[in-house]
Length: 112
Length: 118
Image 1 (cartoon, chains in turn purple, red):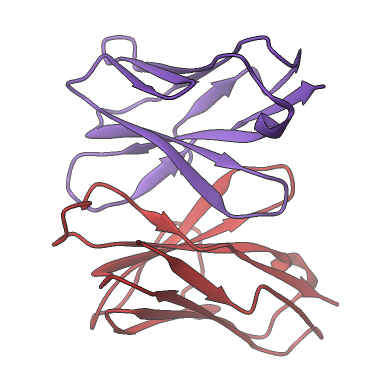
Image 2 (image 1 turned 90 degrees about the horizontal axis):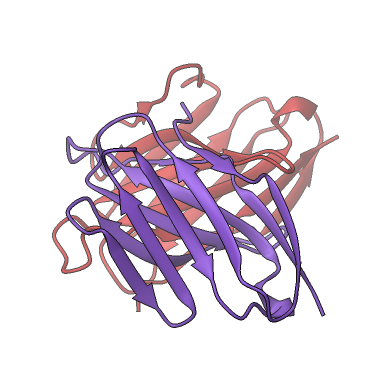
């Protein structure tokens, strides 16, 4: 079952602007991961943040995690047209099953 | 490293036929593989978890007799959609994880297989 909700569902910005996507989840987690998916393609792993971490950076990506609010955000700075894609958060729950539960996703369009 | 392949990348079949999709981990041993289904403009839905050498564990609502999963080796899992119908048309994505490796937290995703049932 899907436990993640993301907002906004769709986001359209100009190249150079920042894009922020939010993800909320319902149960406790081991870690939370963000993925990108270009239309009709597979998933690309962007970043993983563990439950004991609050913020993580990777290039133009910044992820925050607030376990008290069961939420995470993904910030893409200085966006480019090539960032146009769908972005999904996924939670890896305790129990070591390895299952990832995906959020509904945010579709990002970056206009040149 | 950590490459997962799927074959075929797309397939079109007639209603009532069976289709097999392969998922391979190319440069690591996948102790666990997962199968997801994604309908257009929707998120990924986990269908089942397969551990090498044992029966797959299916998520609620997924028919195990319709979606046969075999994970006979540490590098190969197969999903067979039996007696496919148009409503089974979807994008099927596998992922692999090596619980014994240094990247045990990560899942590595295949490129997906687009199934169209006529």
